[in-house]
Structures are given as C-alpha cells and as structure tokens.
Length: 390
Image (tube, rainbow, N blue to C red; front, side, top):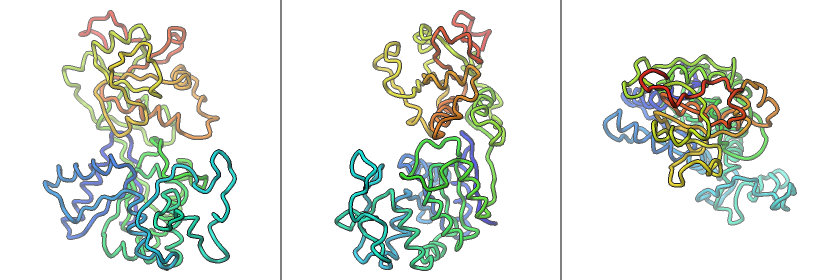
C-alpha cells in the first residue's frame, strides 16, 4: 500500500478513520503517530482513541505539528546545522525578521552567512528557541544536511504516520512531506478537506498555497488520492447546499442521515429569516448562532447569547444553526456565484462552507428585508403550523 491522501468532507468521519487505521497498525504489532495542527484536535484524537480502543496505548502517539518538527525532524540531528540545543519554539504569526509595520528586513537575518546557515534566521537571539513559522524550512535544511536521517529514524519508530488537517499546511510543510515520502513510500496517510482551509501553519508565499496546488503536489509525489464523501452529520438538503460552494472540484456529498429524529422532523433543511424573526426563531428552535465576527448583529441578539464565529466553529456540529453572514455570502445565496472569484484567498468561500456544514438538521441565514426577495432559499414561515411545514 502506497502513501495516501484522503479528502474527507465535513462530517465524513475522518477522525474515526484515523483511529480505526491506527488501531489496525497497533493490533498488528506496530506504532502509529498522528500529527495535527490545533490543540483541540490533538485532545479529540486522544479522547476518541480511548473511546474506541478502550484504553490508552503507548503505541498511539499524537503530536502537534510544531512539536513534531522540533522533536522528530530537527533536534535529533540539529548538530549538522546548529551546535547549541534548541529547547523549545517561539510562536510567530508574522515574519519575525521584518521591521514592525514595514516590509524591510532587520539586519543580519538572511538564511545564510556565506555557505553556512544563519542561526538568527531560524532561531531567536538566545539561539535556544526556533521560530514556528520557519520550523518546516529548518527541518528541510536539516534533512538535506543529514541525508534525510530524521525520516529514516521515523520509519524505524512508526509503521504509520498520519497527517491530519493537511489543508492547513502550506509552502515548506509540503517540502517536509516530500522529504519523508522519499524514505517512507508506504507509511504516510494524509487527511484533510481543502474546502475547510481557514488556518495556515505559517506566513509567507511559498507554493503550494491554493487547494488545487496542494492536491497537485500530492499527485506529483505519487500519493493515491481517495475520498470520504459520505457526510454523517448533515441532512441531504444541507449537503447539497454545501456542494455548491466549491462547484465541480470535489466528489458530491451524500448524507448518511436516513431517518430524522421525531423531535426535528417538523423543520429541516436550509432557510432565510428576517431580522424581525430572530427572537421567535431562537425561542422555537434554540439554534447555535454562528457569525462572521463577534461584532455583528448585537442589535438583535440577546447580550447573554453564546455565539461562535465561523472560525471557532470549525470541527463542531450542532442540530440547528442560525448564521449571520457578511454581505458577500448573502450575494452568493442570492445567485451571484462569481462573488468569490476575485478574492486573493479562499478564506471567505471556505468559511461559508464551514458554517453551513456545522448544521445537522436545519440552518437559517439572517437576511435584511430588502434582500429577502433575491434569496434562492425559502423564507421560514413563522406562522405555519410546526407539524405541517419544513
């Protein structure tokens, strides 16, 4: 079995797949490593493993991406580049070498001094902390200098290495996978959904950056492309709406929800509602409110209401969802399917996909009265008897 890329749609059970595959490795006498970006996902993987396997196991290891880079790819062979032990990481959202508020580099921060790697490019001035945004690049440089020794060591320790949420990887992260792929041609399983790219692991503009570029990169490494198109969370109406966000790029989503619970069967699918209906909708259905930013719609939402932003809702699921979207999303829902075409990034499109796919049974978008008539979704009829309409 060669290396694999699984494109796992929202609600497709990718965590369950990783856990089941890891258990197979363990029961065959091997060890499995799962590398993922967010702390919440690390906690979920550990919890779900115990839930399925029945107990903890030293043969199931979960690490954060930056911990993996430092502990497994850099530090064991760092002497080929830097003699002083790198103790920990320094988190960097922006390029640490730029003067604040400018695009001008600080002096002596280039990657090399002559033919030698410059520690001030990769490390803080104390030379014991590695910048997270440059860790993947450092791991690649160590791999080159050590003849890929870290990958060979990793292959001896783990029979299977899973990379979760690979949609959030960019640039040098893919060079790391390329280096591992050379030594581990049948040990890697990458899982993610490029429709849900709303984080990135680092700054910079090194390719691949786009979903199509990332998938092409895996193809060029001879990864087998597979998919998990079954959605175990959302009803079919919501699946079909979510499929319109990235038309033609992915396999169509099929809902695994065949029978609706009796308590939700009177109202399911996707709707729009007026701002004047929000109070009634909240009272009747108690949906989880998702909004683009925490500053939106304070005028008609209760001050004590618990809300998520689109970004913070990623990975979560709710029976019913009420969505407060920016104007661009409402234009899309009114039939302007080119509204995202000139965006520099996929963030707005992907966040709409994430918000829609949080809902199991029903979702409703709040739309101002002037735009209601343009919407492609039905208006919720507050007066209709609950037992009769959706």
